[in-house]
Length: 304
Image (cartoon, rainbow, N blue to C red; front, side, top):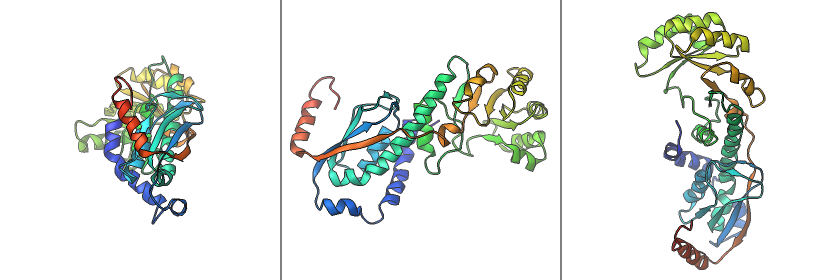
């Protein structure tokens, strides 16, 4: 699973790649208007209601550009936020703020959009016992951020990558010669600590997967009646996952199936961004700012 610590371990390299994509030699626009360092601040403003995710990543973009940049957080990941709400203020060399702005916002908008969509779907499943999880249908080089955002929004993570678990899909089954053959090969090869999941499309495949000893049986694009029949047959002797074109528009119908997990690629590949913006950049007196910060640090219970 991806939590804030595991995300941070991977984040710096990926953020540097994103910054290198945006700046090859210099930020020509910023260099044109600011020849020298000048201390300033800008406000991070939410422009839509939603769930915020990615604030540590947003801040890290500026920190990697200039370790003297300071981001004062006024919200936390997982908070429900409102249009017009100020989420943070960014303080530092205005050249750094301008250069990092787009990359930082790209991360925050994408991650917050995923958290918001996940929260919406999780609410639709409340009381059903179904666990909502993501898939590997993520943006290249964004998986760690997107899966973290799913968890912030109240969902769970499926496997992170191909090394995490055995998931035998239609082409694996075709290559092996059948469900039973694929499961037998996986049992012979994979570590005994690793679960084996099989994607099935009909009752014959359900029976083959169960008889072969699959730990998890994924019902892929089956009708509601077929899924209910499969759940009755499996009868709790293996975990049952539902998958296939699940969205916020149709997820509620799955509440009565009796499965354990619903996996949803839409959480990461179809969530719209949450609109946030960095506004009101202006010069401030650095000495006065840091004096104020020191005073805030001295006030018991006051967040800096």
